[in-house]
Image (cartoon, rainbow, N blue to C red; front, side):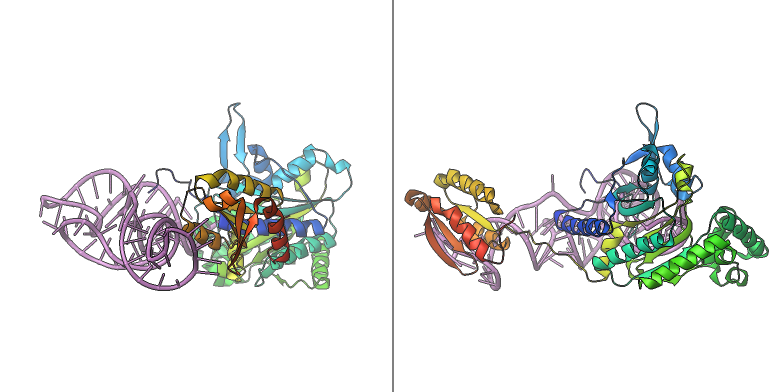
Length: 429
RNA sequence: GUGGACGUGGCGAAGUGGUUAACGCACCGGAUUGUGGCUCCGGCAUACGUGGGUUCGAUCCCCAUCGUUCACCCCA
């Protein structure tokens, strides 16, 4: 075993995989910008209080999953476990509520949670997300959901389930929780151990417990939907009607709960069931209290976040593999001491012209270098040996056509450019 | 945090309480004295995760630990 190993729950993304990462990252940027979202970058660590306040200090994330430490100035610092809190902190701190509203932002980067790793779950993972701050209009909710839907499909995730719900405002939630607790109380002794503790901590989750799901009192427990106030209910109806208008397929799940405290009204989740237990690919919702919680004006917000690692799993489940072959346009083959200097000058000249080129630095034999040229799918092999140097030429070999000609050194670059522009391989801009 | 499975060269994968631990892929070289994708031949390789224990002897049995993985919890 290697003497040094990466920390648990982290991953090395090797070049072949990095190509796919970059592909989905680029797709995300393109789609987000199409909807006029602009990128914001906030620190990877914040003062711990930002997350305690933003995420909610009773959540699992804050209570047991944060990477928190004291820095050398004795400040409590936390590696961000999610993106929204930092973005909202920045919005308030930079007083952007004074400018045009709403703001439409996206972010991307690593997040950190101290969790037990499993399929689709890591300690350092990567999220992309969007936030709209300053608009409560249901059209915004629909736009954000439709954006997520479009993005996921665009990167090849076809088999999706979108669940939506409204978790209401503080008033609706208080009334619902009260009713729920009263309803469940008689069943309490019969519930599983997890639900016993959920009753105190997070009673909403009892409704979709895998064990107690069929308990008569659980099955008949009141849903938040029945307790929405008039405004929240109207808002939810509008959101659904706009989703219909935009032909985004969804199902209403009245028992869906989001894990972070800041959500209000609209909550939604995109699931891909074939990627294991961590089936949520992207999730989000409205957070109308959060800006005020950070000391800003009473402005509403909505957003979502998606995990790249899970997106890649979902892509694989949808046969959306991405293959970027390791390739060059031209491979230069230098044989013998006399060829060393001419060959490095040649690759420099080609690269100046935008040709992707490499050569062998291990003094391999001719056969081996040809093999490498072939493996790298080079259009051309440029052969410089003792003979060529003596004659002032370069052997220009077309690998596919298996033809070769001797070309004067000062004509080589021009000829290579010409051949590449005529082939489908082209020249890298 | 809870529970289960698993840890053999770079990767995949056999195997055994006791001489040099198969094989495949990859990589390198040769057949083709300077020319590729196939084939054949040969070679390379810090391999039994780590630490204890049982044993005359352990890669193999036991325990612990670390790691991977699956599920729960929770979540992207």
